[in-house]
Image 1: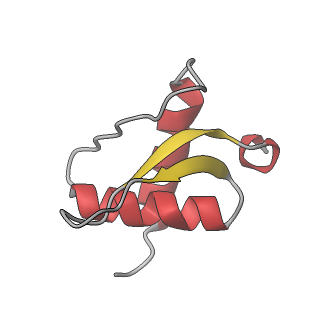
Image 2: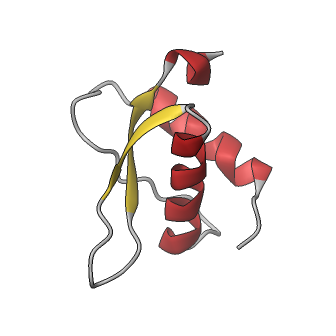
Length: 74
């Protein structure tokens, strides 16, 4: 899967709007599949821009965002 900087930016904006940093955020963005969103959440986590949970199990790939990091706010 290719990295989509527009999707990554949209995810960061969605995470920034969320006010409950103790729970994961179920992000849905029109025009993108849940797999595309999960993949980009994983990339943002690896880049240290967000805190995220890996909920991947036998039913499929699933990453959920939790909050922005200091770096992610910048």
